[in-house]
Length: 445
Image (cartoon, rainbow, N blue to C red):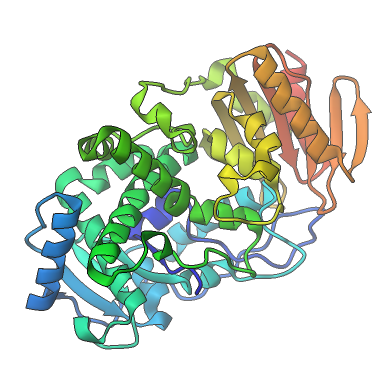
C-alpha cells in the first residue's frame, strides 16, 4: 500500500511539500516551466463539531499522547478532487505562483526534478494526501463520503484521522502556528520542526494502532515509495515521517515524553539534530553564518546582471546536502541508516552551518551558491572530495584556474572550489557562464 501523507495545512507551504509542475523549456538553458490550474476555490464540504464517536476517539488519542484533548475541534470531509482547493484556500494565485516557481527552481537546481520528462508534481503530491489539520481547528479527511462517519472509515482513513488528532492536540498545547512560523525562516529549521511535529504524530499514531487495532506500529506508514517521483523528492517528502519518527522514539525512550513536549515549545534548528537524535539532548546548536562574511549577495547580483534577483536564501543543512549528493540513488525509507549511503552520510555529518542564495532571472536562468562550514578542516576536505567525485563522474569537466566546472547530463553546471580551512564554497547553475559570474565576487576577493 502506498504512503498516505498526513500533515498540517501550513506545513505544505513552510517545508516545501507542495511540488511545482515541470515541463517545457530546454534542460540545458532553463528550469522547468510552471503550469497552474484554479487555486483557492472554496471547498464544498461543511465543517461540523465532532460527533460523540469522534469525541470519544479524540479522548482515546489524547490519553495515548498524555495530554488533554482540545475542546473545540471540527471535522470536515473533502473529496479527492477538491484537496487542492482546500489546501490552497486563502492564497491568491499570484502568491502560490511565486512560491511554487521558486520551489521548482530550487528542486531542479539541486537535481531532484527530471526536466526531460514533464510531470505535474503538485497534482501528483496532492493525490497522496490522506488528510490534514488546519489551524482553524479543523480535522480534514480525504474521502468520497459526505461526512466523517467513524464506522464507515477504512483502516487507513481511521489512521489518518488519528494522526490529525495528534496534530490538533499538539496545536492546542504548543501553538504550532507560532513555532512553525518561527522555523519557516530557513529550509533546514523548517524541516527539523516538521520532523518533530510529524514524528510525534507518527509515533503516537502507531502507539494507538497497537493498542486499538493490534496493528504493528511500523506498519502505519505503509510502503513509502512512489515510482513516479524522483528519489531525492521521495527522501524529502518522507523525511519527517521516517527520520522524524525515529528521532522522536529515541527521545522518548531516552528522556521521556516531557523532553518531546519541550521540543514542541522550542523546536530544534537543524536537521542534523534529526539525523543524529543524541544532539537533541546535548545542547548542540549549528553555527550561524552571516551573509556579509560569507556570500556577498549584492556583489553576486551585480555580477549576474540587472535582471537577476535573489529568490530564496537561508540554510540548506545536513539533510539537503546529503540528499543533493545522493541524487538519483534508489530511494529507501531507511536511506539515512543504510551502509550503501555511508560515504555520503559520512561526508556531511561534519556539517556545522551554511549559507546559500538562489538567484533567477526572467529568461529561465538560475544559480545556487552555497558557503558550508564544517567542524574542522578534515571534515571540510572529506565533503569536498566526496562532492567532487560525485559531480565529476560521467560529467564534462573543465578546469579554469582555481575553478572546476562539471557539466551534468541534464545541463546543470556545478562549479567547485578547493576548501578554505573548514569552509567549502560551490555553485550550481544553468550554464558555465552563470556559475562563473556567481562566483566571480568571491574569486576576486
